[in-house]
Image 1 (cartoon, rainbow, N blue to C red):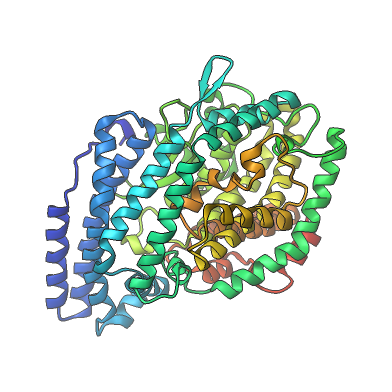
Image 2 (image 1 turned 90 degrees about the vertical axis):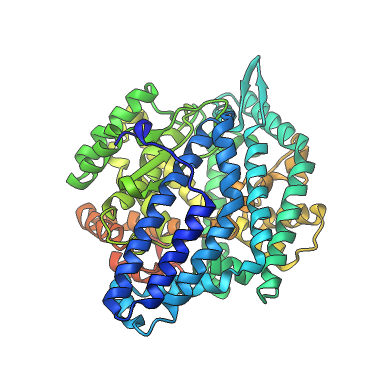
Length: 553
């Protein structure tokens, strides 16, 4: 069904609460493993119906932030979802205590049961009010960022559309754009500080009510990390500092020489070549048609996938003033349909939508016929391997988008992949420090960010941008506000994607087969998925050193 034709009807708490209670009763009364599983399957189908309506409302709210109807729907779900989660805990408790646990583990996989156990440790009705408040704070942040408007020579831009000018060939244009962003965020900096301070205190209170010292262990449970812990993440960040930061800084120095600059400035952060970085050729419609050609040639599976997406209007990529910033892929379970949301702005970020977000969407499409939702589920870090690796698998077709500058794009893309991991680890370490010290003042948090920038990105120079210079850049990173501890998943996945890059440079067809195996590995945890793909664990000592040594730069 075409997205525009998908009907929407509010799913009320009264209805959901009653239905979930009904399924709990049926599950408790079912005597055999098969009978319990049948109830669970019907419950899962019902959850898919509700989720589809909630996701439709969320997409349409983000697409047109000034639409009063969907804003009200979004606010309604912010309020009731903690109640829904609490009700769902009851069925999770029944399943976890079932005498037929072995049967369920065989049907759903080990990860599904582990996720249920973690969810039970991460939620309780005593924190419903705090969870509602947390949702409202996340929406408040999104609205504040989406509402930022920048005057650019009489044209009103949001932060997503301003990014184009931060990548301009003319350094003075870039500098002006960076100053504009610095000023715009500086104007709302106090509000952002207030929102984040309330978030940190809220999440810390939730953690303490559930018996945890601080939010860090609760954050890990909510990210459903069953096969690694904080110590392994610390060891990974140590490898990044030891092997990748020196490589990245060496590459930044080469970039400085290539650009002919005495010193790199923040306004040069998104530029690699003196003639300007390559930008995609053609209109939004032409870029999408070239995407269709690319995926038609990559494999039969990707051809079927992209045709499905195009035919059913499952892209909203137009940049609009009244549209929420950012980009993502989500899944509409009733229609077995991935959906991609983005903001085209005339930069290489536009093709990233057709590579990164389509990597997410392709995996969702491959697993769309799973019998129950648990068999579609993947860990967050595994999800980012699909997206980041697809960026490399599609590089052979970049002539479609960049013409005779395609090779330049491939060079820049690899450099950015390497540059990203130190930044992502910095975001992660920042959050660990903040949640371990929840009483920090806004000024102390900015000081921590500045300290970490010196460790992970020592070349940075914010001169002329006082808000960023004082440690305020992290407030631009929405994941820090809305998805705590998620950002390290990008780093782990980018490491795995670079591993795929090394493999595909040696044997593309073999690497693609392993990638398909990874995409089909729904219901597997991170380490199980890596085993399916034949990839080494990023946590293993020597992995980062080996990848750095195997890259062709």
